[in-house]
Image (cartoon, rainbow, N blue to C red; front, side, top):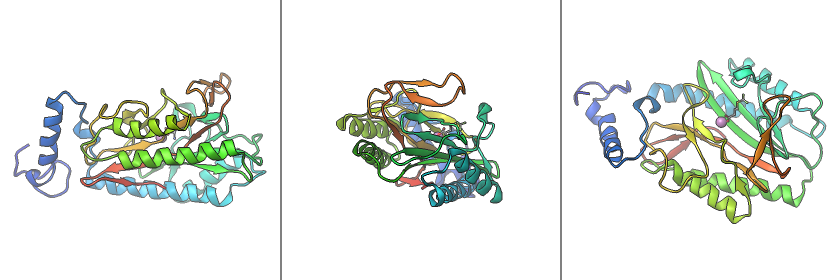
Length: 287
Ligand code: MF3
Ligand code: CO
């Protein structure tokens, strides 16, 4: 691009005052053999604004779930809350019909790792831990986040895995910095999980997000520090490690083709945030 031309991102600034220094920096890393994002993975100011609106609705949906979720409720009722709240506010639940997923939200209990399907016969009971994973499309822009909810008195085992998962994600967020690497986040998460005797699921991870539900890059939480894609301002992706009590191995429900369970029947917990890499750090777009 010509240095004095308006930047491709639509900021209205000249290229030399906008993305030129970023792309020069990317080139230096690429020349060292590092994995750098393509320009298409760097969100423009307009896209960022729109994706933030989607993320705000996604947070409001999770808040609506948080307000009502309780012992005795079925996971189908959680699905109904998500569907009603999202559509009432002009959004579309991204999971609904996504690759054949039949419901509006993923609800994963106890030994379920992820992708649990809401069901009228799955009733929340005292001692359960549940991940509610909400994803929203608003005006064609995508957002994604999940929280853990605990039902009444839970065991010390359950308390500990939820607490350590929160700590893992907090450490992952703290390790995410422009001009660092995805592997820095993975290392922060994996090392803390391991120090607590837990494991991190390897083959299911996070993803780029915003213009589509799942964009590049795939985000692993088990890769070494300094490895994987360079973190460049404008990138957007999820931090959503799945932490298992025992082995990281899992299997997928043969009947419904979706629900992922721990192989050893141990507990699993997950928390998901969506983040934007900025010039100074990261911005967390969901709660
Ligand atoms: N929210 C999940 C994720 O983080 C979505 C899984 S696809 C679905 O990628 F169809 F199950 F929703
Ligand atoms: Co996700």
